[in-house]
Length: 256
Image (cartoon, rainbow, N blue to C red):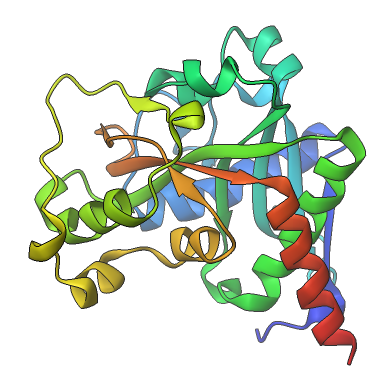
């Protein structure tokens, strides 16, 4: 089904059924499409869950033309964790993969974005913008300064993505005050700038990561290989003012 901007609506989950719809989309994307596994995968009910879900807010993107059924029109999701959510859960999800100390020691009010995904038929500008509009409202209402979270390259083979990873470290590394570091025991040997194939780097970089970088996103130091999820992860960090500015600009363009 073609995307219809007018039919896309982002709102917070307000029931267990809403959260299950989000978890069912996550199963469709992370398990069936990307090959993720782990203790939170429920194949019988086709749900992807983890221990952080009960503590978080869940932002759902619905296509209002697709009501009813198991997913009730949910075509995109973000899991949102404020510092209060993380305190209740014991930590941020990302803290298992990255040392978040520099960011946590800053004065910034932060929000972790997790388990973000879109249904394959909705990947592209309209759906992502609608999801970001909902996210922009959330961060503005709570006066949050930074959003951050794990973003993934498919597969657990670092050399497969080495040009892209090296390019990100050369061009988009976060300033020291925000530079979280991966909890990998082995060092990451990135390519020197003159050895990076920029075209290959662009081909290797997932579209969602590119979208964040285009609006001012930066990355932490290093990568973390998540074998259970079959991904190679970076930590993306974005000032919320950049997100709000982008959303307002795109909305203004659409209204013209």
